Length: 128
Image (cartoon, rainbow, N blue to C red; front, side):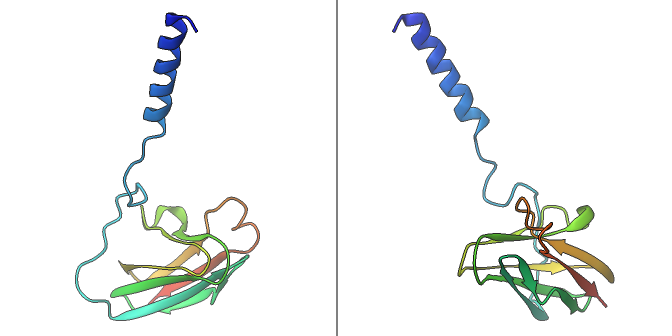
């Protein structure tokens, strides 16, 4: 390999590494959990391709939202940018949780893995 090809290959490899660089482990959205203890834990089971239950309710307070995967890899995010950066992600058999504080109203949540929402992975959280 000529020296100019080696330089080009090295530069291309460096660009590839820079382009693939991570943004940290927080999902990249900058979500910050509220302080203080949770007043309630709301549990949701995720499977292929469902949330159970898919209709949830909670008070307008600090709540711990817990996602358990019965099978497969799944996420839980909120529609319409209502909770920017919030994401729970689980692999088969795993559990993830975060505290959240929402104002009264209805919030649509779904799995943002390609095709999962279209197959029924969507639900509603009502904050009273």
